[in-house]
Amino acid sequence: MENNKATFPTIGELVREIFNITGLLAQKDRSNSFLSESNKKKLQTKLKRLADESSKIDGKLEELIDSLRLLLESALGEERVIFMVLEAVEELLVTYKSVLADDGTYLNKRNSSKWFIQQYLLDRILLSFYKNYLKINVPASKLNLPNLKVWALPDIEGQNVNWPLRKAWQLIYESLSISQSSFHYPDKSVDDYRANQNLENAQHWSTTDQIPSISSLFNNLEYSLSLLECPSNGSLRRLLSKSEKQRLKIILFIGRVSSYCFRELESNFGREFLISCIDHVKGQSGRLYRINSKLDKSIKGLKKSIGLTSEVDINRLYFYEVSRHWEHYALAIGHGTEVLQSYIAHESFQELNKIEKAKLVLAHVGSFMGHQVLTQLALTPAIKEIPSKFIELLNEGMLLKNNYDSLDNIDNYHNELKQAELDNVLGWLCNWCYANYYYHHKSFEKSYMYYEQAFNQAKYSAGRNQYLLVNQYIESCAKNGKFKEMKKAVAWAQYLGIEVRWLRGWDDPESEGNLKSLYNLMGNHNMHYAQL
Image (tube, rainbow, N blue to C red):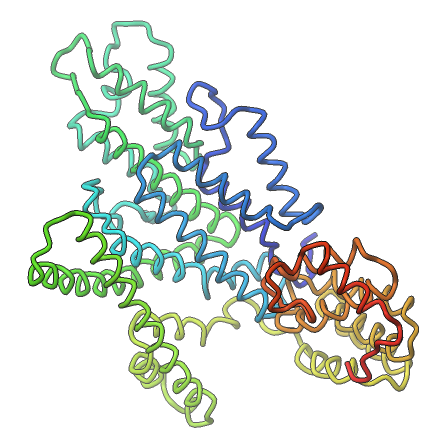
């Protein structure tokens, strides 16, 4: 039975999925592993604990991102590509934390994920890659990667999907002017079990939806290339430089990452959603490509007029000019969004037809952001209708949590939630009401029980309401002698970027001394907020 508790995935669950996407942990063949078996198990344990939030979380996210960097360096070795991947991860996490701290959800984990993918993830990742591709001047690395728009997206052919990994291998064969069979097993007269297995694996990957690990792909590639260095048939001889081999690895890495991501979209949300995501990526990629082309032309003109010839100076110019462009872009979009919101809030906006709405949106925020806004305007019904009575009961609960007159009112509200089948969605708010009632009447022990339940239920679902709730829970921990629980709540708030009262602005808010001071201050029963 599907879990209908309203929640976003935890940050740790997102990080674990990022590792899954890279394929750097799943390693069956130890001959080309990027870390030892014991270190792999330790890393998997860290990922699980962060996903479950079952142990200390402070500092663990940074440790895992550093581990990801080391794995990428070991696997890819191309500094610019690694920078782009890590920047995309960082921007994704910043965006996700912002969403968690601001946007609540009435959807279960699956549908909340679907909403986040459509509304934020696709555009955030695309923008990050296009921006940083030019910012760090990737073309100067001379990787000469084939046009990603042509091969790094799945092709839907009837009921079948041509995954990017399949196309990546085909690109490799074509670049070397060799067949699949000759590439993997050039000397059929020789009984070579490994070559035969490599060929069978490659054929299997080309005809099924299986997504192998990066180590499996790289092992296959490296052994196949070693056979092509001195085959019995001289016409099959291929000698590649170290940089050329690295280029082929990057092609396989991109193909694997893209295949995994899009396969997961189809597996979790269906073929229709997969197609809509592919179409969205194609459209937004075209818009970002046009922005990059115009910006690149401008920078090249500036480089020529200045007379720059040093590679270091040229890279600095790209870094500065691209950074400045997107800073100005963000300011312009921010202003345009404010103006646009005033239009959208007006009744007359609803009277416009689709074309008129689109023109108004695009005029204020441009083509890239405009299509994101247009997607958002039509998004919620496409995922799941707002539950009946959700808005009404949310508003009722928000008023009730500041009304401390009667427990009967809260009991009645609890029954309303059950009757509307919204106790999995707004149960946190009901417990918050009980907690505030007992807090107001200075029954701190009873209030703690409800604050704890409300805090745990509201994690990853209450949006901007989490600020007040987590701060009240922290105070309740202190008033009930729960120093360990208070520390965990403070760590979680800092983890999500939620400010903690009396700690904001401190250089080291989670130091033992600062936490003890907060504990002593909040633990004083005479310190009591009259209005919550």
